[in-house]
Image (cartoon, rainbow, N blue to C red):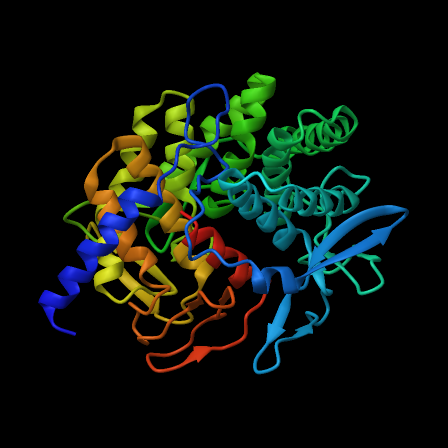
Length: 424
């Protein structure tokens, strides 16, 4: 493809993007960027494969729905996760967030019905301890013991809270249902307030890199970002000073995990944990943009834009990547390890969310252009030169595993994260 042709295609994409992909955010009564991503019903969003993965179930006389975890090439039959189960909170919560954005574009009661059934599944998965178990077996019994399913302050409990806060806005007219959602969110937030280690704000050094020790799992800025995204709408509703304290302490820790700047490696990246960054779940910039606007903290916004303006272009120019780690040597950060693969939708979508939020917040055209570039990863502008989101059937393939090969499976995470990305 010639440079001139690439520039022409990019210009066309930019026109279409500015014209159609940035609808007004959901109204929260405060005029802020919403934790429900905006969508204007772009033609590329196809729910066919998602609907195939979605299955209604009845448990204890309650209608709910699950999303099958894996769907494997070539027949795309359902496959359970060994030791874990066949459906999980993580994917149901993602689906609620994705469907809520779809529902914005055309208030389809069928979409709302699916969201309600998925919320019922989330509520079913809340453990007596207030957190959420993650996985269920095929008989709908809950996996309470496996490490990725234990009811604890972890990814799935934060993601469950995010999805329930999104649902809260959609079902305000249903008093009984809202009461159950309120009870669930209040229980998990009470746990987070009790268990989040934000009072003793100590640091430690890993390979010469100074990191906070008060985030989830010590220095997990990726989990901290998800917690902020989930807690912001809860704070907006409850005005709980304890929740605000947690959000601000988490934001401070995330900013302490930012290393480098416009001219110094690693160019403003938010490390994910300890001295490493990984693409999957890198919501730090997006979380700081949300918090910066809602809480009137411009330093959060500046920090988020530093990563978007510097690390994202570096990553794109380098052909993206899966992970990297750094060390500090002679006063500078230097690479320690780097992996290019696998590249997955869950690694690209968080950057798309951040850049889209940056555009809506600043109105700066450069973020619209950057968004076009990031989204083009799904249409073949990637190191493998392969289309990763199939517009004809709504599949997002599970990842790029080498410079010449992709994983043709299309499970729930990839499918939903892909739809979350292309609907921006």
